Image 1 (cartoon, rainbow, N blue to C red):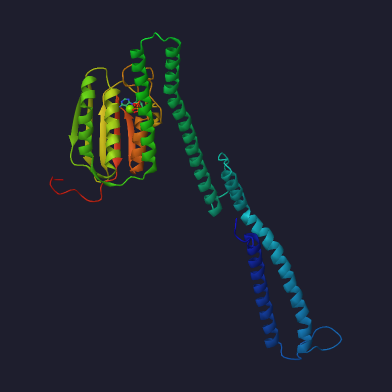
Image 2: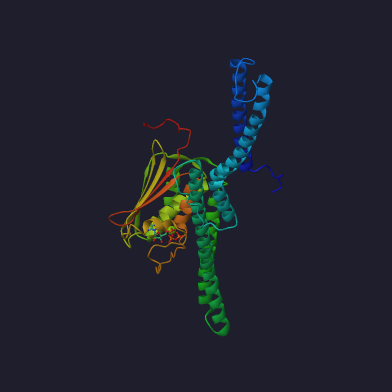
Length: 369
Ligand SMILES: Nc1ncnc2c1ncn2[C@@H]1O[C@H](COP(=O)(O)OP(=O)(O)OP(=O)(O)O)[C@@H](O)[C@H]1O
Ligand SMILES: [Mg+2]
């Protein structure tokens, strides 16, 4: 749009095809002509007819035939070129149509180019792969928006019901009402804050600085120590300096979420959580491992989905999670170009491994190795 229309590629290919054909034809005719002039001296050849022709007769006979041949070549070149170019460019038309469809929002369409592997096939396959990713992403966003709205509506609906009950029964104990309203409101604020955090991590607009994961692990375990004591969980931290590059606030949030999960989704009593950091050649690694119930292997990959709460939806303790903790961890890890690995422990509980890129600068050479 906005650009002046140019010659179509099909026309350009046709013209160049016809042009080359004319050039080759012209050259061939020139060679023939030169050959005739050179090897057939004037007046010494004979063509059946009423008289012995000379060079200028020859020229008169040759020129119109040559012109006819060139005209035929031109027509042939144009027609052949047009057909050939059309056949060559047909896949491109399909790709263009698919792009137009995608642009209008229909992402389910695929080109599915058949035939051998060539440049067009590669382009079409790459395009299909892109559409597939895009479609999955859009689906994920839709699911997320639906879930988020649903989750946000729940506390509002509860509040509404409580207020209605209070209005219809003015003699009710308001202290109790205020307590419940407060709890419901706190949950709504938690949820909104988690959503804000998620979008902040997804935007990737934070400043990056060198961060030591072992310090973050210490800070997170220290903050969560009272919670661990309340749940009867033992916290163990180990590891050396493990530098990486990123946002200290987000990486602390990530560590806190993991340790928090390891505490609250642990055994009812005598649970153990180990937090380990390690500087490897290829990555800076944070590992959080906890005892707990056995987790079904097929359930584990879904836990990082937003609002996914494992199987304990009806949990009655004070931590009724919103189910965004691991989704936030995943977003933070992605934003730092790292990888997140969840594995169910055979004995029960979860092992979470975060690998982040190493800080480019090595830390001060104080320790060995
Ligand atoms: N360390 C863990 N051990 C066992 N199960 C876990 C662990 N971490 C997460 N899970 C399971 O994964 C689910 C999702 O975890 P996630 O942190 O995303 O949500 P949540 O803890 O339920 O809520 P919140 O948003 O408050 O963290 C949990 O409900 C739990 O079933
Ligand atoms: Mg959690």
